[in-house]
Image (cartoon, rainbow over all chains, first blue to last red; front, side, top):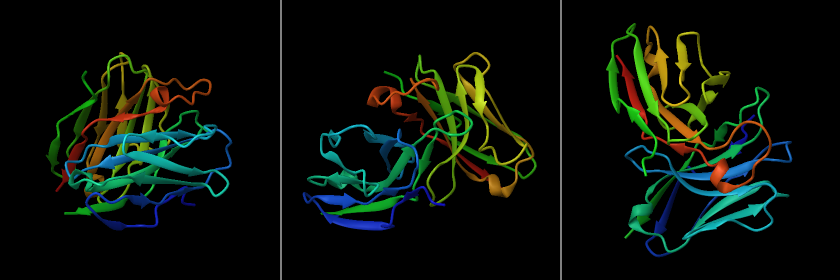
Length: 117
Length: 122
């Protein structure tokens, strides 16, 4: 079963506008972490923002904020004031304990964001 | 400060050839992960090290894949007798966090990725 679902394969946003990228997750654990990463065409995965399952406030990092709705199991990324350099793939990921004892990340399929001048 | 580095950045191999991919994690990071990213997909977990101990190799797709981290810093992912389906980007990530106990802090939880090695098997 898909643990991380990103339903938007591609999104367009006008420069300087805000955009929301959707992410829903599935877990039965109480302790977990949610991440968003940006992957430009060059290929590196750039960490954007983290939300712990016990965090009561939504995480914010500069122009990025995470809209965490625990009951709905959603963790949407909001990018304010989009810039041309924001054009990239965006991946939502979840960290949860595994049976083998590690805590690897499980990624969604990604959303390709294109910022239009 | 230096981030995670990987080498080579690109590798072309003939089917059946052995390859070795190197990862230099961030200094002092205890945990090291390898992921495989197929074209158009998100990364998928391969294996995890805490210091020199390989604690989880459940994601390795076959016994042709082998990883080591003998001194608890640099790691090597080796693929023997490469096949065309091994063509992918191989990403290494490191994190300060250890396996035991819960954390919750952004600094300890975050995995920092290297630029990846793009492997093409012909």
